[in-house]
Image 1: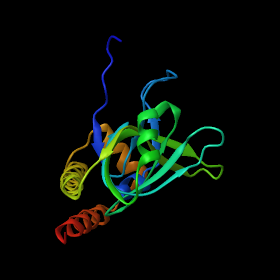
Image 2: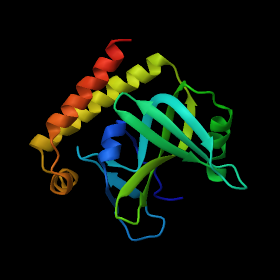
Image 3: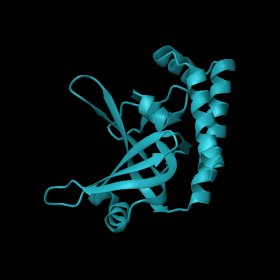
Image 4: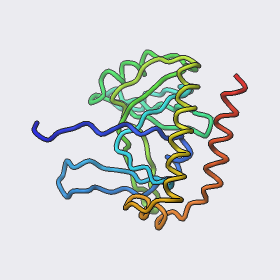
Length: 188
């Protein structure tokens, strides 16, 4: 497909994803990518996460559709995989918990009747990992998050402007999150 490119997978902690609710498309086309803009100014269509797979449940009725929970030091991600994510669904069907995993996937948003936004991940790729992999992901995600905070405090691009306007984030809260995440892996 001419002009097609794969979006870069953004590293993001569970807490920042949970705090995010600004969803948008840059184009009006039906299949235009959907983005989440986070409190630190990350623009994400795809994300890279690593953590402990703590729960897997087949929630499908008549077809296999899995919900999984993956924990990092800041919270929990929810991952859904079904027939259109066949490899990921097969992985989850066979996975034992707890286990370290790494996931690359699309961020999906669901608006509740009361107007809240719930984000989850539709995995494109999932694999077993180990504690070292997870710890490296935490360290790199902490660095990327810190870089976004510094940029949000010193730069004024469109994403940062929109994030600051929408969230009015307390960056001290995200700095504490980074420290807690790094402390969690340094005790290993």
